[in-house]
Image (cartoon, rainbow, N blue to C red; front, top):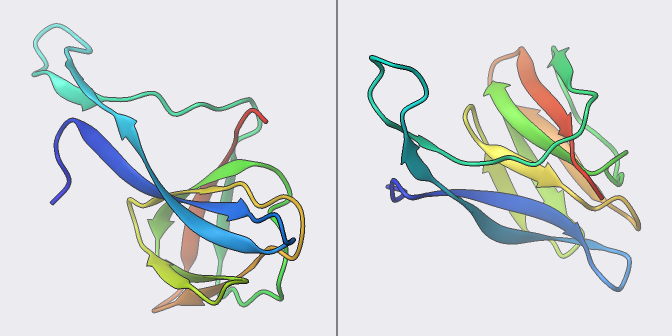
Length: 127
């Protein structure tokens, strides 16, 4: 179980050879009271820029592709399986945060798994 003071996530990165790989990272969290009468909650910053998109799809099975822009992929419904060019495969489900930062090179493949629909938020990030 993740510690309350950190949020762990996986980044899809470009590699120097033009491929992609996974990197593990974390966001530090601090207990904050956001409104009077509400108990303190673990809060952390997620860097972003304008242009959030909501995506719903009945299925998703991509050819290898780089991310169109550096973006957080926030899983809402369904699950995806991402494979990087080094052959590693990871599954992401509702609640998972996946920064896609492999905007150059061969990219990665993504397949929706489980019952449709697949839903996610795409949140662009600063370069």
